[in-house]
Image (cartoon, rainbow, N blue to C red; front, side):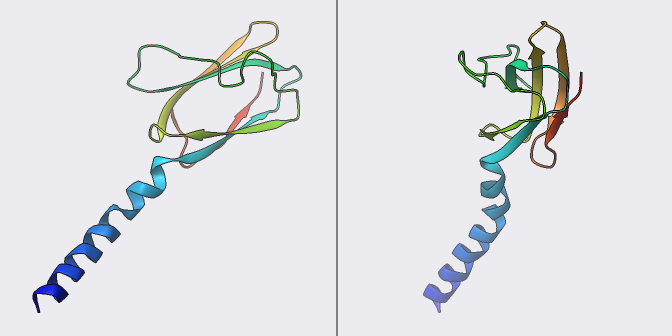
Length: 106
């Protein structure tokens, strides 16, 4: 009886934490719907006071009409800054990366 109770408790704990595990690492697809290339994409957790690194990397741009998918590992709510080749920036604050892809227009 004790082992059955232990097994049921372990199963309940697993099921209770399963949604949190699923949301830990999740994809975010960024679509460039603008007429010019995106030079930088900065993604930071909303509680961060810095933008952090360029997720595209120094040798890549996101051309118009294309998309790229990143793996977000730091929760659903993110601040995102996109910088185009002409240095115009678009910012999305408190963006829910678990439920939405980002479609960037100029």
